Structures are given as structure tokens and as C-alpha cells.
Length: 141
Image: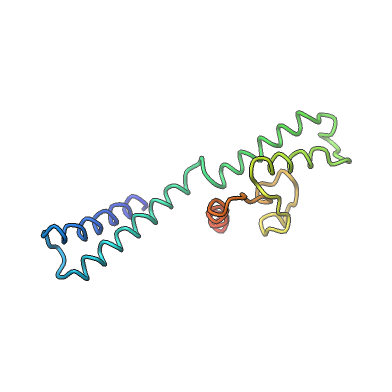
């Protein structure tokens, strides 16, 4: 689907640009500008969709980081694996995620079912763009 959108975006952009080189697939300048603008918007949107679906970005990276922090915390506090009364593992995981650029948000809707430090839904990235894309991805989870 994304490939089709990229193709449509390229075709529309090309049709719009060619008008200004006197190769006219459009009837007038308004149609050419509309095709050019629409093509760029479709192309940019599909490129963002493609980038956000990558496993190395956004929510997938958040899940990997949560697992890495959990492993680090359990390795650092092996005596607390079965009963973490002093919350050493919990604090270690939250601190690790904070250092990695994620904010702990137990009130976030994905965290309400299981507000534990190992739940990757309890974190959101600190960066505005990454946070927006992650929220969009989580809306479809």
C-alpha cells in the first residue's frame, strides 16, 4: 500500500513539474500546481509512514529499550528478582528508561492495565516528533 502511495506521489509531482517544462499533462497552471502540491504531500506522507513502520524506530525501539533496562536491572539486583520490596529493580528500570530518553507516565492509557516498570506502554519518548509518532502507533495497537 505504501509503495502505491509513493508511486502516486511521484507521478503527481512529475506531472506538475513537467507542466513548467512545456510538457503539459495538465490543462492550466492551477492544475499543475495542484498536482505538484498533492504529489509532494502524498509522497511526504507515505515516506513518513514508511519511516514510522521501521522496526528500528519509535515504539519497537521503546520495547527493545524496556527489555534491555529490565535485563540490566535484574542483573544488577539478582536478590530482588522474586520480591522487590525496596523497589530496587523498579527504580533501576525507570531510571534506565529516563536516561535513554523516555518519560515514565503511569497515567497513560496503555499503562493503566499494568502499571509496572517493565510495561513499555508506560513510557513515552521525550522528543516531540518521536512522541507524536509513538502515540499514533499506539492508537492502532
